[in-house]
Length: 278
Image (tube, rainbow, N blue to C red; front, side, top):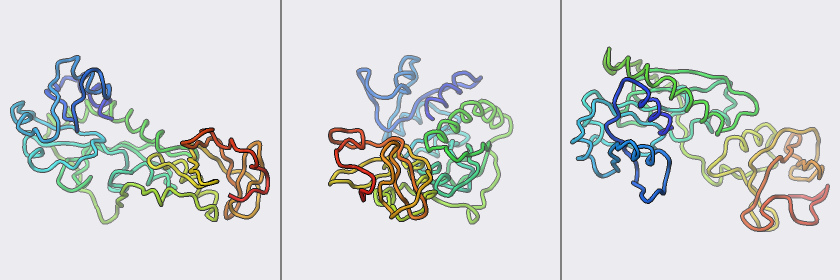
């Protein structure tokens, strides 16, 4: 998201006077965002150096997927204020896991919202909002990619709008919205007694942590699955090629799975046959 916003800013009529990051990285290490900024001689600031931003005298702070709550020592510096690119249709799914929340909830659409930065997470006035449909096979990665593309496309117009009219926006009705904290390891654990639909959503939604279950004292991570025909006792292997597991109301086909120990791809152990109980 940060790289997309920087590209958009560099391609606009506005000037980028600095890049704020969590930690500087040197010697060619780190993300392409910092390498790009360094190649253009854009000053790189890190958290704890708000005096450096004061020296740059910026008009506006533009954030995207920053992952850190910025206090008044940062928000009070820009002359106009700050905006953030959040990958949901606010006020729905505020917080750090908006795409996962949309998939888990079975939403039929998501989007990208530019909102005013405030001390409260994702609660500032909505400056610009664009929606896109969600399909039955969409994943957190795809939602993030689409939102990033929209952010890059919309930022120049949003900046022009702010330059012309100031930092205005529509007040959010937070009572009608929702907040999604990061998923915990326990929430990403597969319970085969749950429905096929809910398990499929879990696999598509979870990235960090990934959806997982235990088999022979090893954790198996699911990166892709899809609903499949079949009935059986929850957790029972119904078929080997393709691998199909019974759920609480049907079956789930395992498309991709892995472990952190050899053989790494799953299944790779002998003895996993139809009738095996996970």
